[in-house]
Length: 74
Image (cartoon, rainbow, N blue to C red):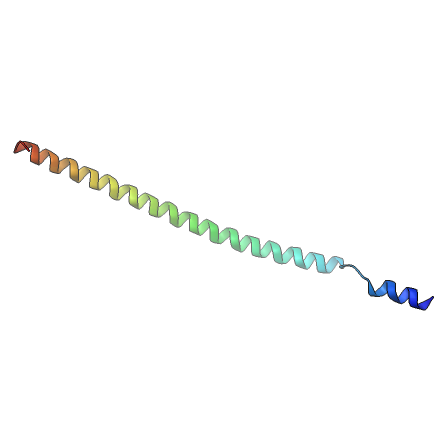
């Protein structure tokens, strides 16, 4: 009879504390990941705005150059 009880005790499941610790670690890692992703998205938006501004400025310079050349009938 003691052997049966000993076998049952050796096959134990996860305790509530172990599960809470694992879930806590997963939450911490997920929050760190979300913060980094948010920073990456903000950097991407800033770069996109910089490219759009540079493109607008270049377009304006091209238009100005074409106006000057049209004065000389080019």
